[in-house]
Length: 210
Image 1 (cartoon, rainbow, N blue to C red):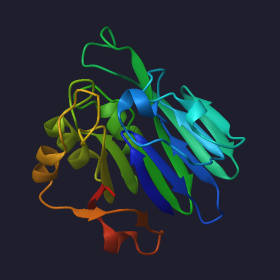
Image 2 (image 1 turned 135 degrees about the vertical axis):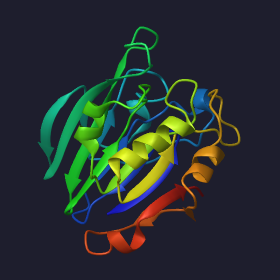
Image 3 (image 1 turned 120 degrees about the vertical axis):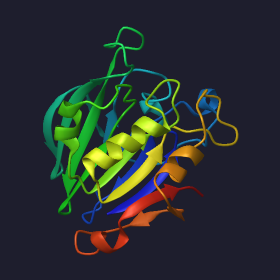
Image 4 (image 1 turned 180 degrees about the vertical axis):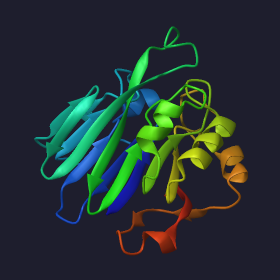
């Protein structure tokens, strides 16, 4: 499994069969992040906000996945669970969808713009996954401390932060520093390549940045 962070909550994943998934594509100019110039077979959109639903930024004839449910697309199992975008039952920012992908003997979870305090139902859906992308920047999602609580409850082998402040970003979120400090160490990589056989040796927090 090859993984690259394109920016914000957008990741490119490519499995051993060459099937490419892109999560939560953003509108580059509005977000202040690099233009997404990638082709995909599958695109997932966790919710209809401009920094997560800019599917026109992605090239190719892809299958678009939105909302909750279960799918198998090009051999990849995908399941979606709705969660709240805030800690007030969705009254502030509505809901979004956490996606779980099963491929190459790995389970990968994208936690969307999760805004809820630690929720046992969400933990049960994601618990024990191999790789988890989790928002850490606060304001519109959980903050670094709540993200840390989720990480400890879910116990993913590899945790990759997302939705945090970087240079040029126009979204009002905090940097990843507090989360990285909470988690007690990390590896900074440009990209991640991992498989079911070696993932235990590569476990921990991975900060994906160019």
